[in-house]
Amino acid sequence: MRIIVGLGNPGKQYEATRHNIGFYVIDELAKRLNIPMTQSKFNGMYGIAQVGTEKVMLLKPLTYMNLSGECIIPMMDYFDVEDNQIVVIYDDLDLQVGKLRLRQKGSAGGHNGIKSIIQHLGTQEFNRIRIGIDRPKNGMKVSDYVLSKFSEDEKPDMMEAINKSATACEDWLSKKFLDVMNTYNGA
Image 1 (cartoon, one colour):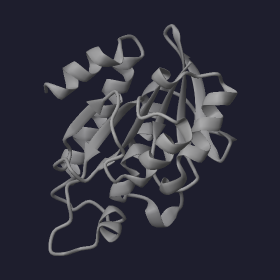
Image 2 (tube, rainbow, N blue to C red; image 1 turned 120 degrees about the vertical axis):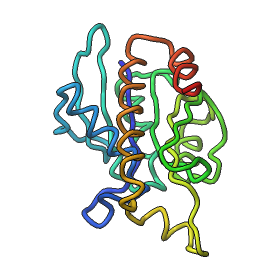
Image 3 (cartoon, rainbow, N blue to C red; image 1 turned 90 degrees about the vertical axis):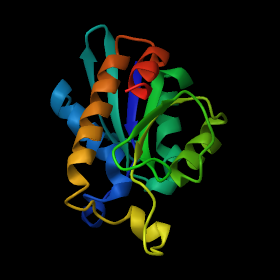
């Protein structure tokens, strides 16, 4: 089984915010792969389906961003999934809006959701797709910025990033993550 995790915050007040970009990719994949997101366990909402030769879980942790590892690790343990069989999708302040960067390992880079996953998993080695949201302008606090909505000018870039991320995840179901990484990081 492979688990595709999109990070975000549950609740109406967080919908359409920068921090929820991982949730948007999961929503797009659920639509594309026809996977209903109707199950819950370990404080996460998920759906599972057979996609080609792979059993795939789409997962949205409902623990709020800073506690994402509290959902993901019990899910991995319960379904007996190895570290290299997950991919985590999340927002990144250090990339320009809509830019993708795929990695197989690395630090949290200040991202509290990734810090939580690293802490609970006990390693920095897991697949990830970082989606750029850029840094705040005009002295806006980072915490306010990540919980703000995308501007009208940014929306086309974000839609493209969501679609590219979903396609990268689909590619990963039949290819090595390194090959997918090389394709999308070169684009």
